[in-house]
Image 1 (spheres, helix red, strand yellow):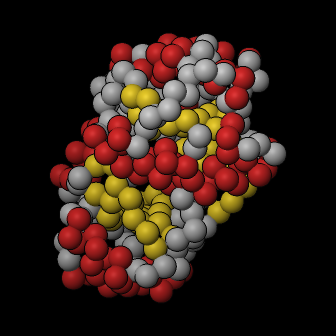
Image 2 (cartoon, rainbow, N blue to C red):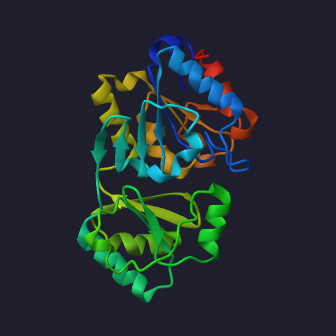
Length: 266
């Protein structure tokens, strides 16, 4: 792999960060103080910083101490900055109806995300376990029979990989991604983290050659393959590390700071 260290500090103008396992620790459920300070230093240097996450808008309170230049949420389905929505993409109603029909016949928890709300068809130990990890999945269960009439950006389906393939056959206008073996995120085609990156580059008149990204999960791999400089967290899985130009330390061991220093960005 080519050495991308030389001259990086002059080249990088935009950095995209995943949240869970990258900025936010699974142990403390907080952003390490060292990372907060590093992000503030990047902004002082004129480098734009962005979020690229599977979380929805309602799951970003953990980032309140930091002002980002833009947010790619729901794996790219809803992208915005402080002034406007840059891009949005919702699931086809026919796909949603097929999913509802599937859920009627299978005991599968599924979370539905709207612009300002998220809810489940029902909750069980699987949802509780993910909430224990993320502290971001405590939303209630309610009647979801009419979701096909709502603007749904993403569905969080607690299925294994075989069931995931079956669901995608029923939802031909959708794609899936997963960062945890217990569930997958199903979202409409056309909206991905890498597509969100392109939308913000166009908006800010930046080039792909000026980008860098940090991630740790399977849903980060397309983004890491897309940017010019890709960093995998030490706590990430092996597939993520293979997609990266550089593997840093774990989130709880100042991994973000160490990578930024390695590339002379701090």
